[in-house]
Image (cartoon, rainbow, N blue to C red; front, side, top):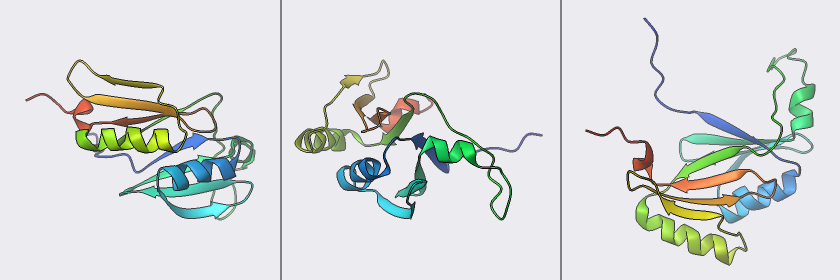
Length: 139
């Protein structure tokens, strides 16, 4: 029998500049910095989950040996991350993002009525703020 997964613990996006990633994720979005290693990564806490931002050249160069044998990884092109935000908070997020100079790329309702707002982080990753009901299982 297969074990059950119940949540995503962490997600990663790959960036080209850690300082601008920090300014966006900590400064604009208000995420707490958990770990920061210059030239490698900045990790942020988002509630009970973790958002990892990596310089892809660093993560691809890892040998997967030593005390932390993480295999090499990385991505080409823009990635995607989605933050959960309840309906009333989405209007506040839209205003906050615009005031911070972040352009809203899309703001719409899905067929099930859930609303999503999309922006881009400084590295071009797609950043979504969506109502959790987007993925609710219908009763």
